[in-house]
Structures are given as structure tokens and as C-alpha cells.
Amino acid sequence: MSLANILQQTGVIESMARELNIDQQTARVGAGALLPAIVAGMGRSSTGGAGGDALGGLGGLAGAILGGGGASGGGLLDAVLGTKPTPVQQGNDILGTIFGNKDVSRSVAGEVASVTGLDEGLLKKMLPILAMAVAGYLAKQATQGDGTPGGAGAGPLGGILGSIIGAMAKR
Image (tube, rainbow, N blue to C red; front, side):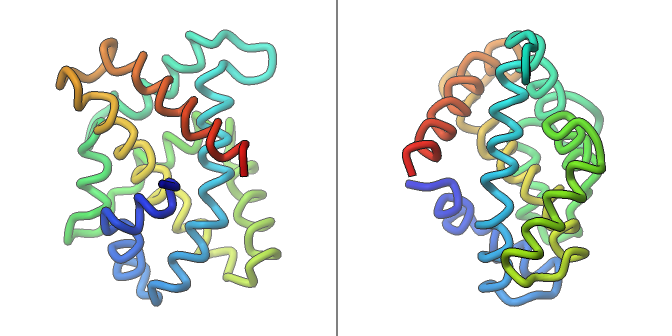
């Protein structure tokens, strides 16, 4: 099953559409177009990027997902699915970790806008929500086995990212 389908089934698309005051089809199109960049960025971060240190890259990504104030780990997904507005700061932190800077996020939104015809401003609002949803889903999967976040979750998190990226590469 694709990550886009998983997010649809978990209610992320519906929740994001409601929060951004858009229809579900627009949310689905935007998410479908943004997800490859988010997952690819997570893949680069988990392998340390170009010439980077794989453990350092995964540690930075795991730190952004599992650490910090606010929602952590699977709580990120719960924050997206909640009835209150999504607190997107941690999503922006994840985007900063996976893309390196805001210019790359803006570039991703601009490129997706040109391909989909969706408003670039809307896509910029979607990015941190989707980053939180993906990270939260991955964190829940990573900690499902032993229930412990952090160090114990970093290995499975890398494995989950690897399987998702591998499946996307086969498309």
C-alpha cells in the first residue's frame, strides 16, 4: 500500500482538507504531489545526504521526529488528526531537517504548483502538515514493536524509510 493511501485511510487527507478549508480532492492532489519530495528528503536525511554520515543524518531526522517540545513521535500524527489547528512548528522543523532550508521548501511548493495548478501558498501550508503526518506515521510504526521511542525506534525508523523509498523507486 502506498503512503498516500495510508494517509487517506488514516484520515490525514480529510483532516488537512478541513483545516485548510479546501475540498478533499484538492488535498489529495496536493498531498500526492508533495509526498515524493518529503519522502525523498527523509531518505536523504536518513542516509546523511550527499557525502554525509548515515548515522548523523538518521539521528538528526529522528531527533526532529522524536524530540523537541510539543508533539513527538506518533503524537505528530495525532496532532494532525486532532480537531484543533495543527501546531506546524515541528513540521517546519522536520522540513528544515530534510530540506536544509526554507528556500528548498519554497522551491518544492513552487514546482508542485506549476505541475498541479494548485496555489503555491496552499502547498506551503500543506508541507509542514504532511511532514508531521508522515513522520508521525513512521514513528508509530517504528515504536509499535517495543513501544519505546528514540534509540530503539531509530533502527526501525530507518528500515521503514528504506522500504518506503524502495517502493517509491520501483514506480
